Figure 1 (cartoon, rainbow, N blue to C red):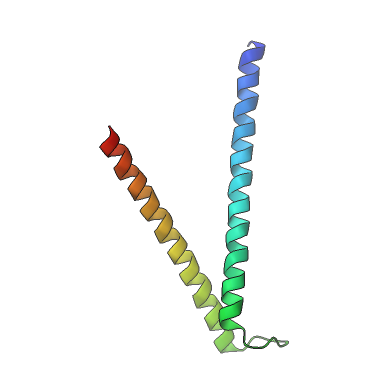
Figure 2: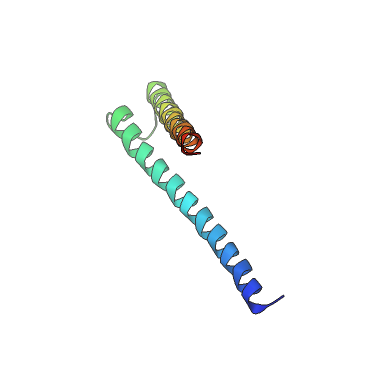
Length: 88
């Protein structure tokens, strides 16, 4: 294997690593975002324990946030797929 082929393999590994790291950062950003949104929506006043209504609110808030994020992602994917089939 030549040095050029080795470099291409290393570049591919680096690109894959960077893509995974970017995805991790996006997940962390989403978690931070729904933590902020759901905290503001569900937490009236901080205390030592969460009551059942607050737990339910937080759970529902996070579930809706995830559902909405997935729906938006799917719609974008569909739109891109539709656009690419039109361009062909």
